[in-house]
Amino acid sequence: MQALYAQLLVGLINGSFYALLSLGLAVIFGMLNIINFAHGALYMMGAFVAYFLLNLGGINYWWALLIAPIIVGIFGMILERTMLQWLTGLDHLYGLLLTFGIALIVQGVFQNYFGSSGLPYAIPDQLKGGMNLGFMFLPVYRGWVVIFSLVVCLATWFLIEKTRLGAYLRAATENPTLVRAFGINVPRMITLTYGLGVGLAALAGVLSAPINQVRPLMGADLIIVVFAVVVIGGMGSIMGSIITGFALGVIEGLTKYFYPEASNTVVFVLMVLVLLVKPTGLTGRAA
Amino acid sequence: MPETATAEAPAKAATGGNILGVRNLEAWYGESHILHGINFDVNAGEVVTLLGRNGAGKTTTLKSIMGIIGKRTGSVKFNNQEIIRATSDKIARMGIAFCPEERGIFSSLDVRENLLLPPVVRPGGLPLDQIFDLFPNLKERLTSQGTKLSGGEQQMLAIARILRTGASFLMLDEPTEGLAPVIIQQIGHTIARLKKEGFTILLVEQNFRFASTVADRYYVVEHGKIIDGFSNSELAANMDKLHTYLGV
Image 1 (cartoon, chains in turn yellow, red):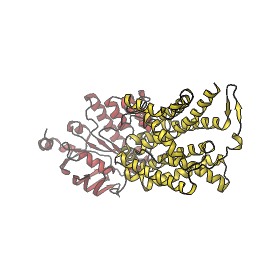
Image 2: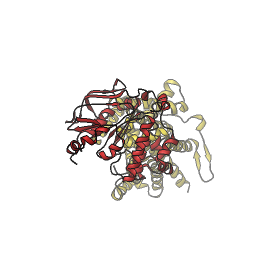
Image 3: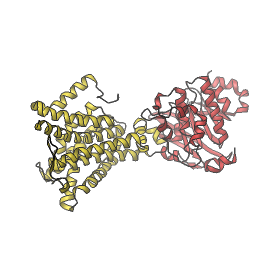
């Protein structure tokens, strides 16, 4: 039983990263109509910024949770202003190629300077150690990642579905021309949205640094699964991507316990099944 | 125009003066040249109607004024300010509001969110209780999904949401299209009431019987040009010509 709970916890942790990343992808896709292949590279940058902040600036984990998403978010907004904005109205393929190229360049640069092995990032003192829950031992940091991710996901959902700013976002996703004709600066909103989606990826990167180490290819490995998650959940649904992210993490964890051989493929098998039955994804709207 | 209405909104203050001047306006959709030199004026407090057949360029004229047609040349002056090069968000913030033909109700927003979506651009907009007074149906349906409303209710919502922004110059593109007579009548009353409140309205209509109940003046658009113009009192005398223009 201990092993089952342990795998469930690993699943929830991975689910947290899937949820944060697929949420960002969904927000970006809704607003920019771009499938952001650079997402994994930006997640990796979040972890590296946290590493630099600590080792070059002496800035701790807690500040990094705030600062790294802002720095990477600004980097993302520069990408959007200088490159992505010119793809408006073009086929998805162009956005995919451009962001894929950006991902390769960013990852290549980091690999050039840091190689492929991981750099250590220590768990902050306040989150060291663990708790005995009776049925299992819970490392505090892992519990923190799951709860904090859930809070961030729900806050993002609230921002988009329940606030006035979110209403602008949803409206501009449907009809940007009309929203702009109401007096809203839609291009600026698009830039900020990309910054938000990218910031969420960077935040996931910071959260993962103490667990998975800081590696140039940490995002490249993860993003493939995340895209499968997005396909299963359906592009463009906020709550859908959160729930699918956590659920698939758990399913993966359970598979590791019951049939470890399939744990790396179960997400893709599910993706195929969902595509066969409902090509728009479980919660997706028709494109 | 009542003094109280003019006092709050600067854009309404120029009673009777020219509020919109369009000169030699040309516009393109991609390669196709739609407007070939449109010239007309709208005075403050007037209801002016653009008449014309399908594809004559009426909607394109409104969209060009609003700044949502990519390529446009000539001159559009609003309150004596040139806006031909301005982006649509800037134009909206100067006090022009647009109600598109397809109504543009957002399906991912409920009725309340749709109603409150356009930001207030200047003081002097209608307060919500007055809007619900004009459109009581909307008040009952605030939590419905925007696109679950009937066609008539969607049209009311599309008009209602631009009344609270403080924009004093409204452009309504075929507000009666596809609606039942009783609803057309309600929209007619609304336009008359808005005119009384001091709004200036530029209307696009195919239904000139409806237009004749609300308009002060008419312009006829054909092949991307204004080919005629007359006031409501001259309507009867121009009926034969109008039938030829519109092919009805």
